[in-house]
Length: 137
Image 1: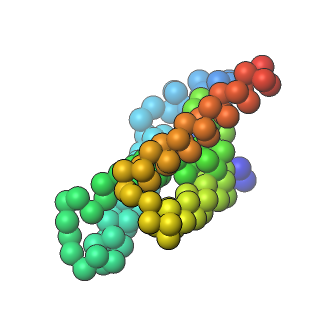
Image 2: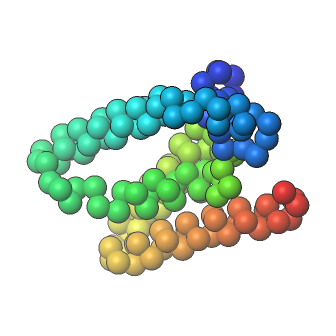
């Protein structure tokens, strides 16, 4: 993401800098590869979930969006954008996976699991906001 031109264009789109004007002038074509990549990865994830369950159920991916957002914020992504790494998102996903696995081993109810995951997300976002205010940016 930092060393390739494509990755720098994605980061420039989210930062408040002179590069943002250049990306804005690029128009919707600059966003097309990102949305295309997300569509392909979402389709691949759907196939993996369907293969894992041996069935295609419309409720198979309920609340996966909370886990995706929480893992990216736990991994260091910022609410204001332009910050975060792929490695951080992977580490955030691993932390959330360990949290899920631990709660399953402790037989925590699914309702309480959602509450705990929501609190972890709130803590990550709160830490991000506090860190931004402390640094003055």
